[in-house]
Length: 252
Ligand SMILES: O=C(O)C(=O)C[C@]1(C(=O)O)C=C[C@@H](O)C=C1
Image (tube, rainbow, N blue to C red; front, side, top):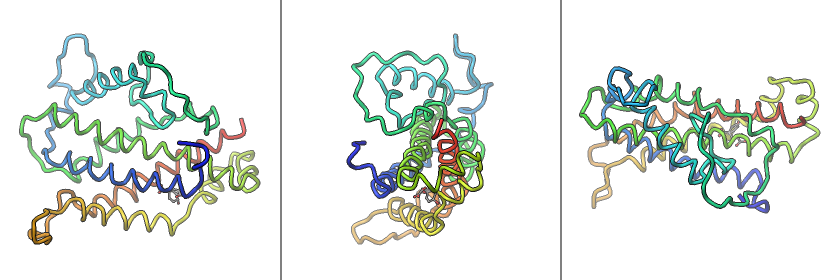
């Protein structure tokens, strides 16, 4: 992000654009049933791999490859398995230094992984298996990365809010008052707008398109109420958690 564009509006515009990515990723994942072997240790016995599932194997391998291509040099990106990742092998890009350096210590991907695999998936995919385990895992990594990027974007939201009103935030930061910070950064009306908009996006993006432009079957590829629930129960609360964690370290 360029410095000149760094305002609450521009940051919110990015969150709105990321909604499209998340809804499309969920639609792609919903093509496959649960495919539970992809999440079971008993299914993977890959030489040299001691992790707990095919999904973990694919995420770790993908992150290793993408780290060499510089993905995690970008302050918007966070690895699910950040330990022992290889260094980037490409020339580094001069990302503008918007965030406080303490941002580097915040990574809640373990919570995102747990939420996605154990709570969200069963809500929007059909039961059963069709053998497409590797494709399923590839869809999972797209969903996980999109959710992680959106939730950790809370660092940028928090930074812009702090810069707009440092005197409001400083006393709560010094007092390490998480509740006061949560109150300061919460905008209930904005959350309600987000909730309604993602539900609508799930309806628009997930309908059957035909030449009469009518959603003839009245069916959606992902249940819009699940997308709204995803945002209300997990995406927005976790984004706020990232904001609080970031603000607590903002004056270090
Ligand atoms: O737009 C903001 O101000 C945000 O902090 C983002 C967000 C969200 O996650 O969508 C989180 C907290 C606010 O209450 C409203 C929305």
